[in-house]
Length: 532
Image (tube, rainbow, N blue to C red; front, side, top):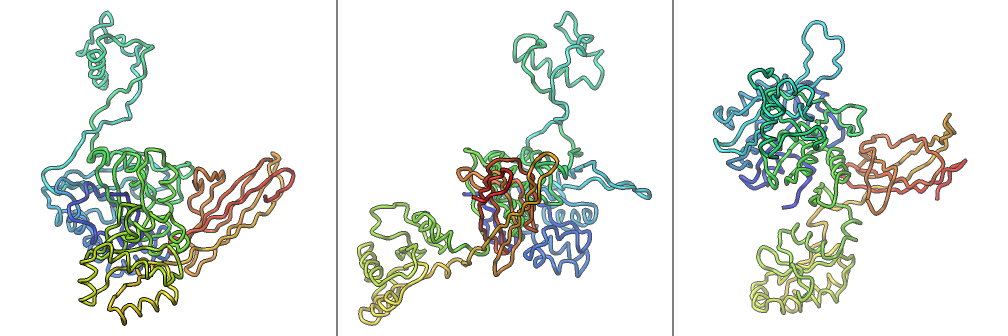
């Protein structure tokens, strides 16, 4: 299967996924804290999804989450695992009323404490709350698990430190070794056994294996000033997800994150060559995650698809013809024809076996109807005659729009010859919308003390559905595609200091449907600003 990033209600989407198909589910649902904290992105999809969540207090929250975890239990393979991330506001309720009830107390494996040190103000009347809880459950008594080791002790052997514990450089005096150095003893002996000689100071650097990982994980949160920061306030560090995925999955396993948020789970799964499905009701979450994935892609990355509420007409209309034929046949529930030649003009079949022809065009004419009628008869003459006698369609013709001549010819065939052809417009199969428009103004704010030109860029998007966000690529190269340094900009205004040179800058706008448009700005800065 292809990796998928899906915009929508995770409950409805999970209900459509096959049972026992997922190896690991990691979920970081909105915490039960207060009415405003959980609204992170602030876009319409998120607010609409959560607006009634709090009306019943903790019982309502637990009921909402329990319904979703029940679906997750169905989706997990018998050997699968679930990691549920929460905090002190509801962790006891979640364990007792959801996880123990659905997965069973006997399938509880660990309560992991993610401890993070960050600024917590002047707390005087209680201890600063600086940890989250991650509950680890399995679906059965058989599951995948790889023991991990504390990687804080990676480094090289310090020979000066070791000298007092060696006899003639060959023997370790383990009985006199301090307790904290026992790991060095194990690794030293292993190194000698594997390499058939003693290590030397100029040997290659190698790691020192620490103790097996326990249930308290000290992992720094993502620094607000870090280049890894994407603008998502509860962004999780990749190191946290690496530990989870490496411990309970293998390459090729399928990971589900039903609250994709800032996209850390799927970004790490992609790097570790796991398959994945990410779901979120927020357009901003889906689009930020999509660009984050594109930014880290290389030649070995697996393809992925993004499923939105609506599809851009221009993108579909001018898509590669064969790719579009395959995609729209599948969206209609049919089976596409894998051959591009010798198919008699038939691009696929419906579930009932009817031939399908796809025209990636508007205003289809009468001649297409005539040709399709003949193609259906040549494709399967017996099926053609059977459906004709039964008054059933002989085939399905899909296009963006049909002209008057085509519609009249379909009517004539039905009345005069008893032949029914089903015409389907693309928008009857998938919802279509027009992508947003975008314009960019450039304003010279003068020269700073270093001689750099200070420039204000203002992007203005227009869409009937409303504008969600903007992203900026300050070194745009068409061959590399759009790879933004700024993923999330809700205002569309950026100020940059540029030295004299030529620049190609791209800004992308996203509307409430997740549709997008890009404007490329070619700029020359040399004493004054000139748009090329």
